[in-house]
Each structure stands twice: as C-alpha cells, then as structure tokens.
Amino acid sequence: FYCSKPVDAALTKPHYYVLILILIANGLSNSIRNSRLLLNNGAEHYQHFRFQALELRDQNSSEVTCAGVENLGLLWYGQSPQVQDPTLEWESDSLVLSLGAPVYMNGWVFVPGAEASKDPVRFKLWGCHNRTGPWLELFSSDDAYARWPGQYYLRNTQFPVPLARQ
Image 1 (cartoon, rainbow, N blue to C red):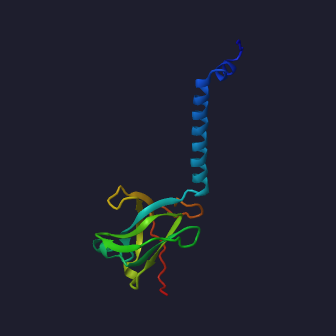
Image 2: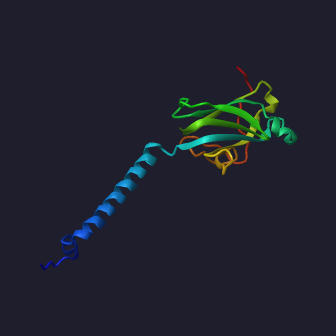
C-alpha cells in the first residue's frame, strides 16, 4: 500500500494508534489541569498558614513577638471557606492557622487585638502543605502589589491598620 503522506502511512500501522492515543491523553490531561488553574483564578491551596509580624504600630521591634492579633481568617471570594478542624496558636514569632485539610483561598483577614499600639503594620503571610515547611510567602505588606487582583499596596510603607476597635 503506497501513501504520499507520512501521516497517512503511519495511520496504516497499528502500533502508531497507541502513540496517537497517548498523545491525545496527554493533551486532555494538560487541558484539564489548565482549566482548573483558570477556574481557581490564581487561588492558593494550603493546609497551614503563618502570619508573621515584622513591625508594630509603636515601632518597638523588640516586642514584635507580642503582636496584638486576635484572629486570622481566610477568604474565598469574600466569604469564609468551609474549613475542617481549625487550630490557631502562637509559635515563636508567628501566629499559625492549621486546618484539617487543605483549602482554597484568594484573600485573608486578621483581627487586631484591643491594644492599638501592638497592631502589626508590617507583616507577611506564608502558606505550606506540611507544617514543617517549606513555607511559601503568599503576601508581604512590603510588596508593591498583592497576589490577588484589585489589591495594591505601596512598597515599604506601613499597612493602614485602623485605630478604631469594635
């Protein structure tokens, strides 16, 4: 059997069908993975989150480990996502939020304590899959931009934590 085109000739051989099926499966797999990334809109997916204060409002850097943060929360399009078994504890100079399972998040909040002078005005948020690390920096108040669309902050300035308490 004679074919002038190499592809037509390859299609006449049964072992090339296997190669073509592998290529199709690989293409579908890549398409599914890319679709998931687009649907999650750049969201982070971690089980452990670490809030680290770098500077307090009163600028006393020796007491950064005593930052006045009462709570740390995650957001998924402005709403609190469903989390399993959350635990929140101070670990050296960081407030660590650990969950029973990984969760998608594209935003976060912290609740300052009663004492405004202890408010963190420079800080970082880290995420990881395993509590022992490696930790990936998700946000820094020193960044010129946040990783989530629509949130922009000036580089090397203090974050505007409100003085008013509810």
